[in-house]
Length: 332
Image (cartoon, rainbow, N blue to C red; front, side):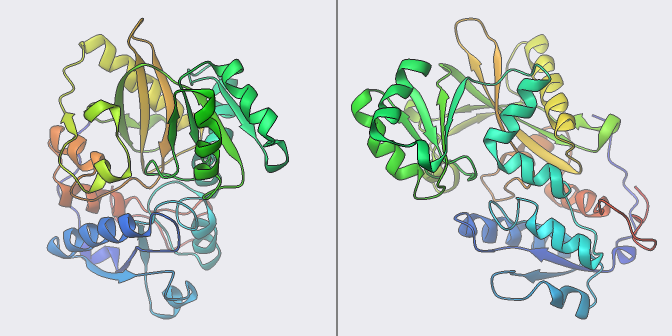
């Protein structure tokens, strides 16, 4: 990992809005992430202010003189290209991926289609639109993917609405849970093995993977509650994986990130199949969590990058898809 620059003139960043909260199912986590980022930026001398798009109109950003935004929103209306598009229209640079990459990455089906098109490994899946969710069709999914399998809403994060289905009789309950969050349905082959995650910083050819984190949850239950509100999950960083295996995961993750056109930062989640140690990409997050339990800060710390320095680095690289004349980053 190339060291991050030390000398940054934070006054040149101007007035900064930390977008947090929002209206998605991940609002609670976003408020936790945003508070952490806000405190970190202020501790580094940045003129940072909290801004909740669920309570204020985004047009106020321009009126109130904000020069750039740190997006600490998660899920819909924050990580799906909508906020990014609004910021493009008003010309305020923002952290993370642009409109198209954000929209594609939040949609797990679209992400898998793009990855599959370039030969990246991702579990087999069945996508069911609302008019394809008859009881008979749902019951046939295990015949295609085998058991156990995973049922999830394709456009949510933080393990919201996800079920592991062990038998045919569990399918309907899993579908009912997932469709509370998304009318579409993603059923995915279950990969039996270890879960890992790997963050990426940068853009294009300069994108670099941070250290891989190995995740060990009780009985494999790396769910919403265990992700954010308990300390029962074990994280290994350094991962302890063989060096060649970690390097291959990092290579795949950077390729997956670049294939979607991501920029700034992101974090890919993967499973390593126990039988042959083959890694499979599950999804990529373009606005990862920044809470006390979050994984990007953990990986960055293992690479010698503090939480505060990471936040400033991401803010310095805030950008627009179509840059306006006066929005260049003040030194990278």
